[in-house]
Image (cartoon, rainbow, N blue to C red; front, side, top):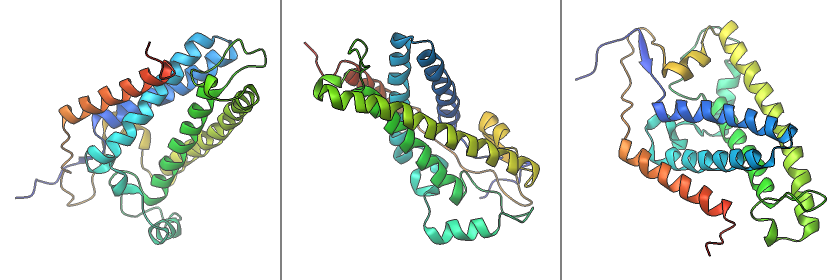
Length: 226
């Protein structure tokens, strides 16, 4: 038996919302600590971001429907059809990420992963400050990783800028408050729409957290456990 129609419908589980806002805060803190040359906290922030990325990949397969990659990584046809309808002020409200937004999520995760990965191998020009995996590459390669680490951050800023513009577009033109949805986990329901089934397993979430923390800890040790 279907659930009754509701004024709002659930689209995001608590873990996805927490992941999103923790990532926002940690990216900002990483930038600040880097500017302040506070490398101890910069590294800790990087490990935390790494843990978040590992958890997000895990949750992309084990989480509820809207968190799974299979629900929002769509083919070119779906993306093109969605883009063609962007000019309309009306249209079906996405149940989670829309086809275009889904690929923006993939791009953001990939670029952040590249930034974190480069930072793990990076070393400054004096060799005083370095990532935990810098000893696995030559000093020249480590310096190149440091340059890449900084360059990729500019790419993240560009993606963040596009993300903010998209959020503003949806708020003004589409009248969809994506920020509120990411805070509350709910969006306005369409006429006749029933409340979505967004069940998730706390046990699986805990497993994902343990795996993410273990990976980040092992990386922080440079895989040296003596």
